Length: 119
Figure (cartoon, one colour):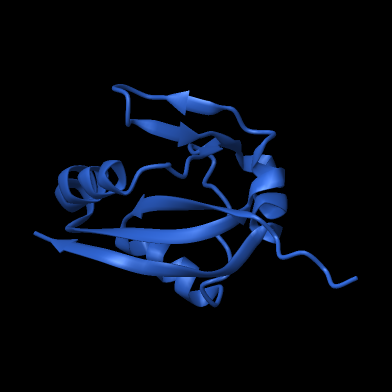
């Protein structure tokens, strides 16, 4: 019996230029370790929300903002309850920094750059 394809969930990540460069260095296959002041990695479940953060926050703080899209094994994601960080569509997953390597191991395919915003 052939293997069943892995069911995946699409996630988005708004990011600045420094983190994007690190993702590029990792071959578009993983997110870099969190800094000490970043105890949580939070991908989002809605592209519009990711665009808003990249455009309105990252550009103001970093001079540029980017939105990435990637797929993660749905069964693995079940361990992270969806967090509502505001309105109905302001949804995130909160991945503890110490679990990021395991999270990265469950990314299916490459992380894609889908939007860019500049000051």
